[in-house]
Amino acid sequence: MKSTKALVLTAIVAVVTASSAQAQLFINCGGAGEAVIGASSTTCRLTNTVSATVPTVARLTITSLTTTLVAPLAADFGTAAGVNSAGPTLNVKANAGYTLTASPAAATWSGPATSNKQATDLKMVVNGPGTFVPLGQVGTSANPTATTDYAIGYNTVYNWTTDIPGVYTLVVNYTLTAP
Image 1 (tube, rainbow, N blue to C red):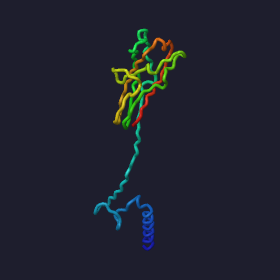
Image 2 (cartoon, rainbow, N blue to C red; image 1 turned 90 degrees about the horizontal axis):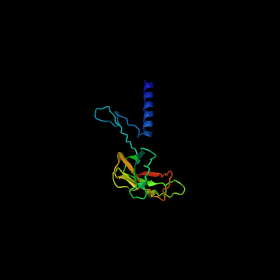
Image 3 (cartoon, rainbow, N blue to C red; image 1 turned 135 degrees about the horizontal axis):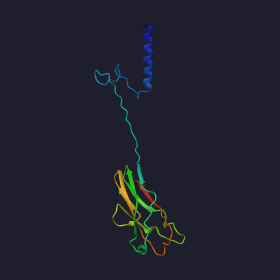
Image 4 (cartoon, helix red, strand yellow; image 1 turned 120 degrees about the vertical axis):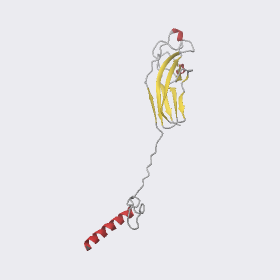
């Protein structure tokens, strides 16, 4: 019996030594001088506080990376009316407010060497019909969104002297920013 008591005493000393080193990691329940939950309960409860830092996240998708504009007819040249074409639809998902803008990547369209077609010849309407405006703000929200669509319509103005025969391209940058 003496050897059993010595063994138990050694184990208790080892637990007490370990508990002193890691006091914030566990709590003993049910013994003299130990924390007890409830007068007759053998249940012991610890808490763990969790935290997560959620950054501002957003997703911008587009239905197509290219748009082929409607080809102009002779009657379309030299008028302010321009030619309407369907553009892409953009989708925004954001866990914070945001602003979506459109801007030309260059001041002029690429095309035939002697052409000088201005980027301002391309206008847009968002979720038309409506008035075509220069490329700029597409949409904005002060609130998060699970999904918001922006259907873009383009209008292109053609000029007799700058729009000579050939293929013209203009890159339009759509930029999603969080405030």
